[in-house]
Length: 235
Ligand code: B1M
Image (tube, rainbow, N blue to C red; front, side):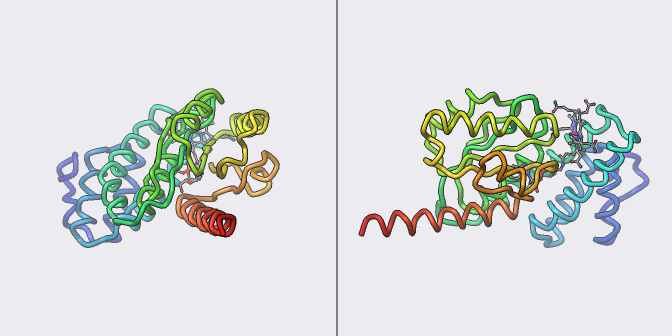
């Protein structure tokens, strides 16, 4: 039952429920988002569809009003918490594909940046595609990336940035990898709303990833090429 006790989410059609979830995300109503996700799962919705249609789309609407000064940080934080609660339910279901292990990815948001929803989503989708994901969190200075690379020896390094002021830090990380002679030991993928293809090239990443689904496709493609190359070298 919804918090105001007037609205029973179960009585809504799929379309109305998704619409209501956009509103509930906007209002930062965590319990209602959890309930909505569970109802859609019971109705046979695929986890990925719930993620994209109900949660990501709801967050897109929040983003517009945040930009336009209609919503402020405390409100958006509540929305983010509600979104995370929904993602928490979906995470094991997305990872449940039984796909063979594809490779290992270290991922983190760059220094100065605390946005983590997109990064978490990428991590979830990569896990679902069979990658082992080591998430080093938010606000990462280059030293944190280096330590994680040293410890986990990933096939892929992923970096996320949501602010125009923090995205240049990706170049700091990549330049440091070059200086240390380890840049080509793994693939570097970058993503985040303000980035684009051109920026990815300019900072020296292997690819810019528009969203989580694209990240999975690009990562798989790189792993395939890598295996082919190693296979050829071994012959
Ligand atoms: Co922030 N914020 N925020 N915020 N926030 C944006 C990014 C902003 C665009 C809002 C706006 O003005 N419209 C704006 C940036 C403007 C700019 O830089 N030009 C902004 C601002 C200004 C700020 C503050 C400065 C506000 C302030 O304090 N005055 C502040 C900065 C804090 C900091 O980081 N130092 C701030 C704070 C916050 C909150 C804490 C309130 C909260 C974050 C909570 C959290 O993440 N735990 C927040 C939120 C939620 C947003 C918006 C509304 C939503 C971001 C989000 O989660 N989107 C955002 C508006 C927007 O983006 N339209 C905004 C949903 C998510 C699924 O999408 O993150 O784009 P996204 O991820 C996608 C792709 O980009 C890609 O795949 C993901 C999934 O498909 N991707 C990757 C992302 N990372 C990847 C990494 C990869 C690959 C793909 O690696 C391989």
